[in-house]
Image (spheres, rainbow, N blue to C red):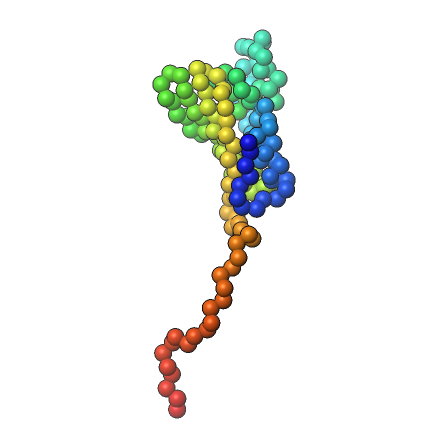
Amino acid sequence: MCRAPQRLLSVSGVLLLCIAACASSSLRRTQVVEPDLVNLRSEYLAQNPDSPYREQVSRGEIVKGMDLYGVLAAWGPPQHRSQDGDEFQRWLYVDLDDAMNQQVGYALEFEEGRLKSWDVHRSSVGLKTHDFTKQPPPPTPETNQGKPVPSD
């Protein structure tokens, strides 16, 4: 089940978050494709003519079950990789969604060389958010706590 963050988001932001993280069978990054990635995709498509993921790779999408090379061809190299033995890997991608002024992190998990799952995390960049559900503290009565000023 998808849970919306506790802070208030715009309706389009909530819909986009739930669509990307909860209901999607494929996932696409928010950033524009780099020239090196185009070459990587072309190489993948040439070397894997029978791959069931050709359409997704050409569109820059990933799907569960995709192999490491397919994800690499679709999204390019991750910003961070970690490996736990020979069977488990975690890749991290970070994008900036300029339209929503948010940083988007994608954590991909691989098991035995196949994409098993992913998580999408969004956070505001440089913006202060205000939680309108909290009440402001009650006003305190003003008291003079300064030094007394001598009168002339």
